[in-house]
View 1 (cartoon, rainbow, N blue to C red):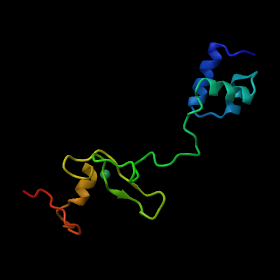
View 2: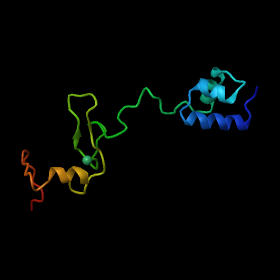
View 3: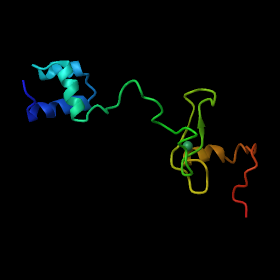
View 4: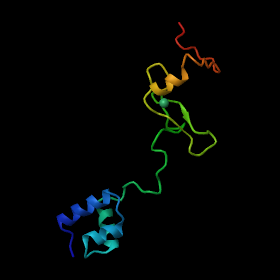
Length: 120
Ligand SMILES: [Zn+2]
C-alpha cells in the first residue's frame, strides 16, 4: 500500500485527535501500526500531547514565574503538584485580579507581611 495524500491527511487528522497508532492503522486499513508510527514520525507528528506528561500546563512553578505572573500559591508547597496561579497580574500588584481581590480584601485585613501597598 502507499501513502496517498488522502491517507496522509487522514493520518494527520486522526493523530491530532489523539487516536493511537493501532486505531489509526485500523481506520486507514491495509497498513500496519508500525507503518503508521513510522509515517507519523517522518511527518513530524510525534510531538502530540502524550497522556504520560500532562503535568502543570496550568500555572507556573517558582522557576517559570515572572514579574507579570500572579504569585498566588495554589496547593501545598510540600506537594509536588504545588504551583502558582500565573495569570497576568494587575499592574502594581503581585497577583491577578481574582487573587488581588482576595489578598487585599478590606474585610479581612491580613497584614502578616509588611508590604507597603500604595505608600507614598
Ligand atoms: Zn491569581
